[in-house]
Image (cartoon, rainbow, N blue to C red; front, side):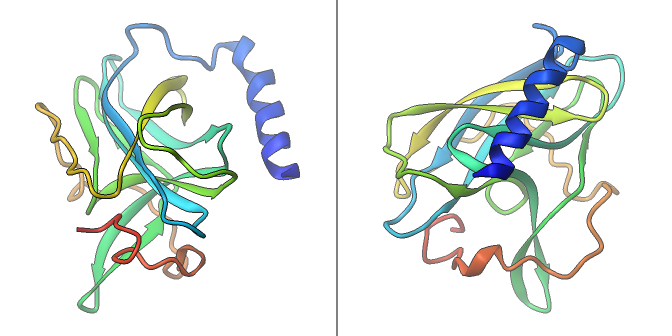
Amino acid sequence: MKTRLIYCFVFCLAMPFGLTAGASGFSVEDAYMRAMPPGRTATAAYLSVTNNHDKACAIIGGATEIAARLEVHQQLMNDGMMRMRPVTEVTVAAGETLLLQPGGFHLMLLDVEAPLVPGETHKMSLQTKDCGAIEVTAEVRSLFKKPTPAAKAHDHSMHGHSMDKGPMDDHSGHNMKKNGMHK
């Protein structure tokens, strides 16, 4: 709880100093987060984000009022098993669209404080290195609803994005197949 309050305080202080993106800086489509099974405190969020800046922008994390942490993660095949790990950043080239989707780059909401009800919407703010914030409103969707593919997404999974070099993250023991975040 203290960590979340500190992060929100720092984020609110930074906003007046130009860290929020202009209206034309980014376009976001099909933003949603998955409802969680009972007893779970982590879920994933997905969206497509188009960088309308004239320079590349690196997404480095974010914040939301409903979770203590919001991180960028990547799903990778490792020794025949699908694993997820946090990444320090994912870059969206100028004029390109990044699809944050199941099986690739996505957002993880960790230590979610209350159950998420399908149909609700929640705000998230994604931070970039030097392109401001990306303000997102995401709908909560059922674990059983199929995701809607974004029309103009560009898969960045093969690009050389900077990633944490630490060991694979275990996501606090949650089973990705069991909670429906991996098809």
